[in-house]
Length: 50
Image (cartoon, rainbow, N blue to C red; front, side):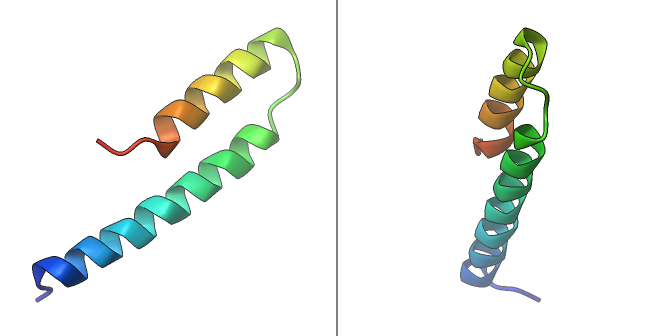
């Protein structure tokens, strides 16, 4: 079983990896008005914690 420090480190690693994946996904969206809106929203939502 993980202690709190180990859990926090693992959570930090997973959330960082998720944020990077979100940024890569958003960069593949089309550069249309709709794509820009979706890109901005998915980036804000996917990279915030809490």
